[in-house]
Image (cartoon, rainbow, N blue to C red; front, side):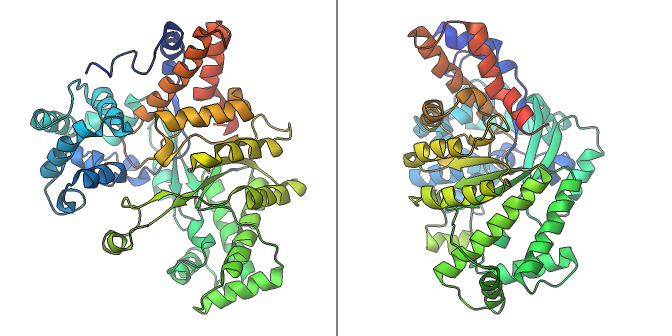
Length: 464
């Protein structure tokens, strides 16, 4: 591949040196992803590349649909080989989409394949990759180790028993696999299946949940359980963080009303969410956890296809919610009680980059280096332009030297080259400004900052 070479995305000697002598040598701390802990614990061996690469990948699905590929070859009943061949047909036409780069980085880094994927190469690449995958030397754990991954944090619901994490803890797998506590289903009270979820939580907690206090007690019990199993992070996927003043009695009445199957008003919904998020934030602070908020997605837009395939199948986009005012009130309420824990804010709408970048500065109080973080570009923004814009906003409004770097946010075991992609973009950004004389030409000094962003800041921040 002529474009995916050793100096891919690196456009001058400063950038080359920063990447090859500093960034590329750093281990990976992937502190937020959606990998299956069961697959890791069982050290799953995949039968072919479609299983590991196309199943569940809504990035690829959206591209295939856009190109006119029938759903049969996307999520339907076509064979794995047929689905791969259809993806190969699409790949040459993904140019300028990050999928083109990711596809060929992953083929190169995991399988040593250096030819472009297209109709002509599809058969060879399918057989070569599938033969490698059908081997214990390409099992999940081996694929992770191959990318020099030091820490992985998966994402689990409060009702999860964490048995796979326990199994990994007792194994000889060198990569540390931890978890993140994701209580969205307990927060989003107006969701259709909310009462069924609370019933499931009752079973795990071991007592009835009839009041708002019962709900808080159950979540506190699960937070303690996760903490005993080594959890250090929470995560929340919300459109925005609501904040409406409330009192305990009305929140309890709202919860009871929903448990009776009644529909809530928007203001009741937001009062409940405000209350439960404050409770969770205070509890995270008690345990010294990091709380993460992924904000700004407009999910499940296509009701017709969502009814057929369900959520997380590629029908989501960027939302344009108002973020600043209620986010500020939420963080301020926790801070005013000195109960604001370390916090990472991820933004999906690039129009809000400066909003979130400046918001973190409001609550960085000098107690911890980079206590509040403007998180890396995610989902639709984890590509070259999105990464660059996030880095520029962070640099202009805060201190990029304190940044904790990239994560995959992925369900794919072949996604770790995204860290390489990020590191190359980062090094080129620094290198270009060093060449122009806008940054010092001291490679050792700049290399230290690059190494911190890629690895050391995260290691310190999460206390791994």
